[in-house]
Image (cartoon, rainbow, N blue to C red):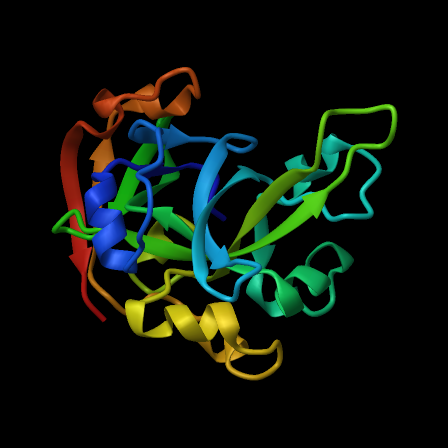
Length: 230
């Protein structure tokens, strides 16, 4: 499960990490991204080159009847991508890299739902394995199509299971091109596994619990629980 995440390092760091070119997006740092919010991701464009695009979080397949469908599809289980109608076509043709530099999980502590930030200890950016689709509102409807996405999840690694049984698929840089360009059923399946890099788990402010809060105060550390390196 991945229900909130952040994208707060500079755009210059993302562009360098992902070898992107072009204009820097006019989008401020986000510390508490929630479902239906706009997110940024890299995909293969019509010219066959990588491009940065904006999506609504919560995948709405082309055949969905309404926008509400996306509330059920913020995550896509790696083990059922080829079976679920909502994700099957996107997995085959429309994969993306969702920009992030940390995500949240919660643990019930007494009467408090306590958030924890999971992120690389050096603050570097990374990407989630994602899928995207394009949905056209029924006529008479909106002005144009809505592009949406979902985060692929897999089993949590051993250290993160104390918080949740699942985690988003974090793709190391060496796997970015394979995820974006390989045909479904070839390379992609092998990439959908628990992250094997270093992650710090930090107890942070309960301000994260409200989607109204989206500032640096959300990641104020209270205690680093552990740092994992598989």
